[in-house]
Image 1 (cartoon, rainbow, N blue to C red):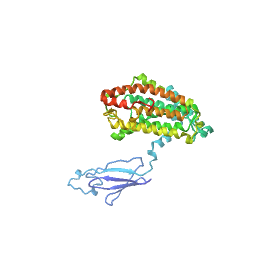
Image 2: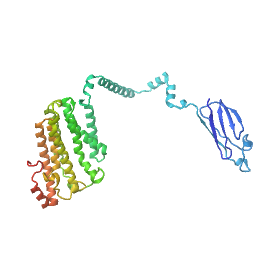
Image 3: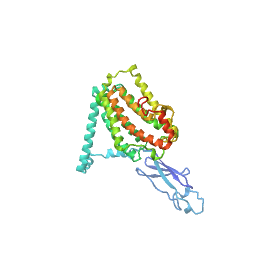
Length: 392
């Protein structure tokens, strides 16, 4: 048995003793006291030093009356093995066939159904995972250039995006949940349609998945540049120019349908040529991003809280069209259709955007004329095109 050291807590008689081989050795002031003891898991006792106590001859009282001395308090700390204190090991030591039998007899029919369902799900998931990893086609398609389309990931992302959108409508969504909304939407715009019609993904869908994110977050980056954070500021509600809900839903459905039609119309992804033939598409991507960023930045510099204009902006992209932010959005969709070689889908998406943005632009221009009067009228007469330079 290992030695267990005990230290007495007393102001007048500090002493200690040790336990070796079931013997207690007390050593106050180089004196010894031996006693036999029985080994147990824990030992605790109190030594009361009063007149007549065997230990009273060892103490040097600071007062005349020995009974005024504080009682020494003793504690034992053992360095012995702690395996007996481990609850997990004790559980397995006490595990027996009889205890298992008692536990099984206590299960109700509901518990049996519940645990059977969980066991079936675990078994099916394990079988599906093993079949996937031992399937040679999985490893053939799973590489950096050919990625087998994960329908399960897209579905889970869509469900979580809808949940986050519900919280966003209630004003309870945090930054991560807002990002989940954007990512789920762009996944079903740029990745799911070509993945569905091709069975794999490569090339342009991946590029536009990230381009769409950059395009959307330019507005957020402008807020960060002006205010130091990403959060929107309260503003005059009259500048919340929105069309009826049914019109917004139709626009969203039209944009989604245009992306699916582009994936259906275009050739298979591996048949789309690469190299220098895509130089024009990269130029359109850069033009789109620069137009969106510059238009948002110029508008924010002449606005309060980003959305309340204090002047009529006539610089940057506003020298060419009156609504460059809407123009850049249409150009982004057009570039996506061109990259997938889908000209008919391009015309469909442009028609959807023009019908929607035309109504919204008319509402905004009426509000600008109400606010700035002749200044905006002169600007509109000078910049005649709303969305497309030299065309419309």
